[in-house]
Amino acid sequence: MSESHSDSPPPPVGIGQKLEPYVSFIGPMAMILAILLFMGIAEPARYFRSSNLNQILLDAALYMPMAMAMTFVITQRGIDLSIGSVAALSAIVMAFLIKQYGFPAPVAALIALALGALMGLLNGLVITRLKVPDLIGTLAMDLVYRGFALVIAKGLVLARFPDLITEIGRGQSFFYLPTPVVIGLITMAIGYYILTTTHFGRYTIAIGSNPEASDMTGIDVDRHRIYAYVLMGTMAALAGVMLTGKLNAIQATSAPYFNLHVIAAVVVGGTSLFGGRASIVGSLAGVLLLSMMINALVTLRIEFFWQSVASGVVIIFSVALYTWLQKKDRDGSAGIGSLFASPAQSKTFRLIAMVAGSLLLLLLLGWLLSGNVKPSG
Image (cartoon, rainbow, N blue to C red; front, side):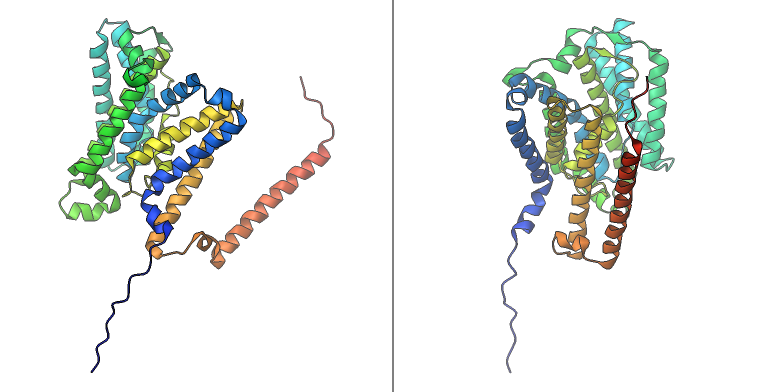
């Protein structure tokens, strides 16, 4: 009687499977290298001069603390659309305490951070206690905080702050790095330590992967979600202080697009919008990528409005890539060609082609029938 032995070696692991755990870092780094290569050909003298590289770092540093905190929020399947208003209101309060009431700059800055933490706590309570969805809750609180900032400032632009504030926003520190860059890198390092070595970091991953299972295992899901929003509010307030120092001025309408820029950087860096997947290093790479991309558009003298277009395209392709990677993990899809394989997907692409073709034909028809019309005025 013979026995069958299944001692066959496991199938070889492909290069794609080996690199997949690092795609959150490899993706944005590949795009950074592409930007460097392109700008090295198109505008090497202007783009690679030391003053411009320093400006890229200063622009990126402003978003590093918020990207670190947003990584925790998004990993827990949350979102925070109020960070621009949190930054503005915190900075406005700090500015009034310094300019109108003579508070010492360190005390006023710490009050701003505490106020940011309080606003993050309110966001967390609205979401966990009142059961308002993250998107709606933080969007509504964004209106509340921005309204308070407008009421307090009354249209004023507050400027000329003590040296400590300007040092935080644009000063030069040791190791030839600007002070805000040092602050941003320190916050990123702290976030990496929290995510990889603490219970809060492990619970963050678990909550994002499966909130119901996490709750059943004894994790206080609501409490840890509140922690994430408190961290987010504090880092948004820190960004508000840094912005005030960078501009040496602040007004109630400042930081209107912080939320979109930060969310874009975190998503581009590989943190999943569906939760359970996080990368602090990827978020740092995403911040650097977006700052380099926007700076490249400015260097190439491309209109400001195209920066929003470019950021949106990067977000769409990044989310599509990571969504496909997660789908491949679940159903074992083989290769990028699987995206176009099914009949339903083929019909969808035919519909897209038909709509796009119709639009192009209408544009062509309008151009042919337009004649030579002189602009009015």
